[in-house]
Image (cartoon, rainbow, N blue to C red):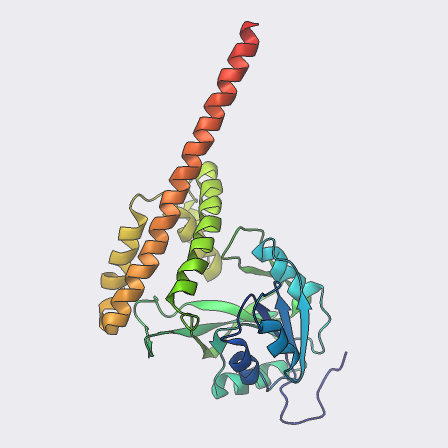
Length: 301
C-alpha cells in the first residue's frame, strides 16, 4: 500500500462511496473526487447504470455487496476493502466537496503524526437551488474522514454513527449535500425505508426506558445527540414538535418556501416513525396476549 502519491496534484487520501441506484449522481460525484487516485464504490447491486458509470471512471474500483443492514455495509466498506492510503474520506453520491475542503484534506492527511483518529465536518443541505441553512438545524457535524482501523460503525438499525478509537477532530470546511437530486419521489421512498428502520430502533429504545441525565449531558456531541434522539421516541406528536422546532425555534421560516417545504417533509418523516412505532407496539401486545392465552390453556390441561 503506497504511503504517498508521485503526482503532486493528487491528495493522498482514499475515498469510499456507498451506492444504490445513483446513476443521476454518480458521475458528478466521482468527477468531484478526482483529487484522489484511489476511489472505491461499494454498490448494493444497483439495477440502473450506477456500476457501469463507476467502472468507466478513472482511478475507481467497484465492489458489490447485498445490503442487509447499514452498519454491516459501512463496516464492510471500511474493513474488508484494502485502501491505498491510511486515511479514507467517506462520501455519499449526492455530496460534493469544494476546493477549500480539498485543500484542508490535503493538509490533514499529509501530516505524518496525526493528532486525531477521525475528523467530523459540517455540511450545507441544498433544496430548490438554495442552502436551507436554518431549516436543517445548521451546524450539524458528522464524521467523514477516518483511519479505518480505528473506526467501527455502531450496531443500530439506521442513522448509524462511527465509534472512534481515539480523539476526533473538527474540520473547518464544509461539504455540500444535494439530497433532492434524484427527485421528490426518490426522497420519499428513501425516507419511507428509513422510517421503517427508525421505528424498529424506536421500539427497542422505548423498551429499554428513558435515557439518563448523564447521557443527555454527554461531553461528546454525537453521543449527546443520540441520547436526545432516543428521548424523542417517547414524545407524542413528534412530527408536530419537529415542525415547530425547525420552522420557528430554528428559524426555518428564514429560508423562505424552501425552508417551509423542507420542515413539512422532515416533520412528515417523523410522523411516519411515530405511527410505525405504535403499529409495532400494538402487534407486540397482540402477540404477547396470544402467548399468555396459550400458556393459560396449557396450565388448565
